[in-house]
Amino acid sequence: MSLQGIASGVTTQGVFTPENLIAGEFPRIMRIATITGGQALPQGAVLGQITATGAYVLSTTTATDGSEVPVAILAQPIDATSDVEGHLFLTGEFNAHALTLGSGHTLASVTESFRTRSLFIRTNQP
Image 1 (spheres, rainbow, N blue to C red):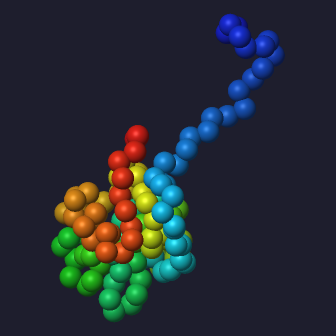
Image 2: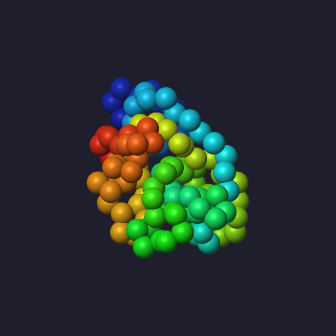
């Protein structure tokens, strides 16, 4: 097949798909921390911190261990079926469409909690 304006013999070398998590220029602070929870988590997962251990887990509103309060955003996909070290964002500006929320949370509920921590949510293109 030949497309107009494409030289013959050119082949596709792959496709670039932008991550779309970062949504602005507000300074980002990233740290390495223990992530737990018994599940694989995608980049952009909204995390809470367990008070007793300091480990991070997907934040849900029904938790009663401190992790019900969203405090960080996962910087990379991670398999947390056991405790692992992973990168997370403590400050920055992030795309609402790229976040994964735990049960019970809404964009409104995490935005309110994040604001006091210099984590800002914007709506970019999906």
